[in-house]
Length: 98
Image 1: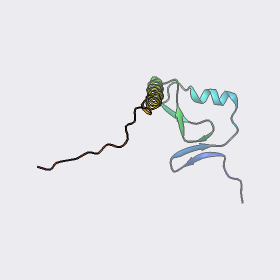
Image 2: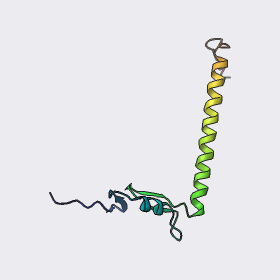
Image 3: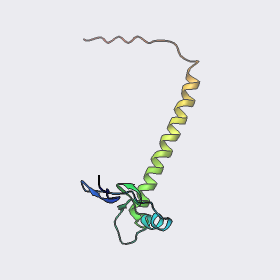
Image 4: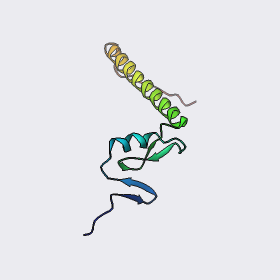
């Protein structure tokens, strides 16, 4: 077998498995003048370009959704613990088709 390339593009998706340096890691996440998505410094695909304002909007929305989900899960588990004692058993529902 020959040497396989450690970076390139396959099916339109970039990949890079070269050992990243600290400078390359930092510069890949901050590229002014480029789009919102840039090639990852290591691995497969794209990552957010933190020099683009749209990336910060995406991060804020994801953070807000995460906090909302975390708070909802905490409230649900606290509510379920309080309702365990109030359980009256199964409920029968009768539907009259008139």
